[in-house]
Image (tube, rainbow, N blue to C red):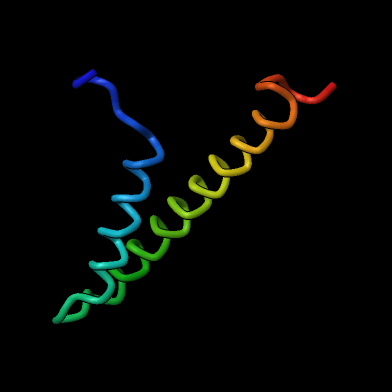
Length: 66
């Protein structure tokens, strides 16, 4: 459906964009660099959490463990 956002693919695209911003020439200002690195860490953490959820779905059929 055209109106539905796939969270994982959006996070992956955002991560690639942020990594590209860090390697740009000229380099971003130090305060902007810190903001980009902070957001990159947050996006990376969210991607890791989504991967962990997938394995839980396979192991317990989508239900939280008892």
